[in-house]
Structures are given as C-alpha cells and as structure tokens.
Length: 298
Image (cartoon, rainbow, N blue to C red):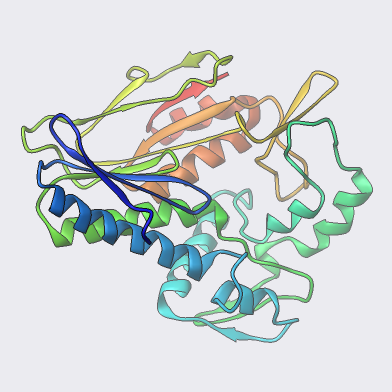
C-alpha cells in the first residue's frame, strides 16, 4: 500500500490511491497532514480488504468458493451474508431487475465501444444460468445451481465507500469525503458548517436535466453515478449501455447517458441510479417516484 499520496490543499488535506480498478481519494477537513495520512491509510486498507473479499477475480474468497462449488452448499460469514440479504431485497424490490447472478452475461457482451453485438443465440445460452429465484439462500448457507455465478460488482464499490466513511467517522471527528471512482459519501459537514461541493462530470455530449444544479452541496449522505459514457457499444446508430437487463440478457437502450442520485448511503444511491438506467426512457419518471435528488444526462 505504498502508493498512497497525501497532499495539503488550500483548506483541507487529500489522500489518494488506486483500488477496485480505479482512482480513490479521501478529502479530510483538516490541515494536519499526519492525520490525513492515517485516515487515508484506513480508507485504503478497507477498500483493498473489500476488493479482496468480494471480487469475483480473486481466488479463495467467498465469491470464488460459491462460484466454483458446482452445486454444493457453501457457508459464508456474517458480512457476506449481510450483503447477500441486501442483494436479495434489491432483487425483490426491483422486480428482478437487480440480480447479482447476471454477471455471467459478460461472456456475451464486451463493452469496448465497438459494434460487436452478441447474437440472440449467445444470450439464450446464458439466460438459464441467471435468476436469484433459482438460488437457495438459507443464511448462512447458499447453494447455486451448476453453471451459475455471483457477482457483487453492482454494489461492492458503493459498499466500500460506506464502510470507509463509517470507519473514518469512528476514528476521528474531522469531516471526510470518500470518493471511490465517482461514488462518494461524506461523514458530515465541514468544520465551518459548510457543505462539501461536488461537481457532476459532463459526458461531453449529453444534456443535463432535473437537478438542484449540476453542482451538489452535500452536508451528509452520498452520491453515486451510473452511466455508459465509458462502457458501451454502438451499432447502426443505436447505443447499447453496459447496464444489462437480467431478464432478457440485452443491454438497455434509450436510457440517459448517466444518472446521478443523492441518497443517505452510497449503496442506496448506487442501486437507485442503476435501477433508473434499467428503466430506459422512463428513467426520470422512476426517479421522481422515488422522491430523490437526481441529475440525468441524455
């Protein structure tokens, strides 16, 4: 973890590192650079811990054991069980649109900006292996059908943000902002009482609609963004988002280029932004029904 860099800014400190395949930073509302290093290291350690524990690309963790159990039951620890419970609730609430068994669709889809759209035959071959309703989950034991996989990528980074903020809040009273690849949460307002100022990145082509401004002022809570500005396919004038419908196996079309949601936790904000994209052209109608602050770019 020697790649942590700590810097003194105008009226705060920043700590930066890389984890979960992207840039991470912690802003600390203090001019104490030693404190910033301590808190930055805590957040870094937590991010790396969660990545190692829940990434499907790591050997030997609970996700690996579940995905390689070949139909045999696997007992998991309390933290993994809590995440599986949460994923199950999201599946029910979303009517099956949020499904942590749908990651297997990556075998058909490659979101590299090209026009390489998979065939219906390729997708049909994977659909029988998708569906949380096919999983036997009796906490703390999970049994997956052979050929099925779990992928917690849809909530892992947001969960890491929330966990890191909790750790920092418990460690020191200095207000902090945790930003893991654009998924953000704050531990509280700055010492002056002012909010944290968060700018929402424009895609360069999209048009923003409906928000309190394209700058978010956050005293508490979190912000998450989902979109296809970097991961998509384009063919015959149709843009295919990397957000996939687990029921059909097909990429969402007609949705906003990005959706940013403000909520009490980063995990909640991330789920809402993803579910909004899954509504396609009805994304904003869905967000209005949730009564959350949001910003869409089309």
